[in-house]
Image (tube, rainbow, N blue to C red):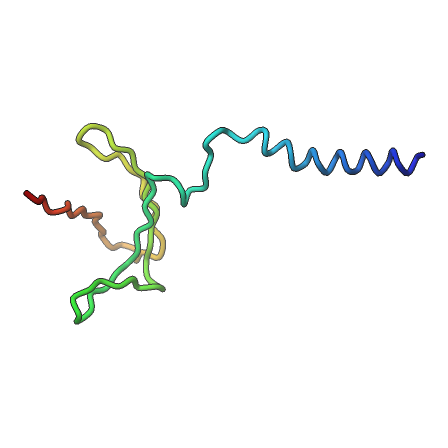
Length: 98
């Protein structure tokens, strides 16, 4: 009988270790990759064919943003950038079609 109680206690403990984090998670929580207001930006290089290609061992960054009226509030975390170098984030709007 002691073995059954011990086994039941261990199983209950293991189940609670899985169930508690699931129950405590906020509704709608998603990983950063799935957030619609997060951009991953990569260093690119233009080739002779006129297309831009990612430089895979180059600089990259993560930009989280919030749109408010006519402004964009953002936080940008860059990686692999050169020290004492000025950088700019630029935006090219989509061409307007009639």
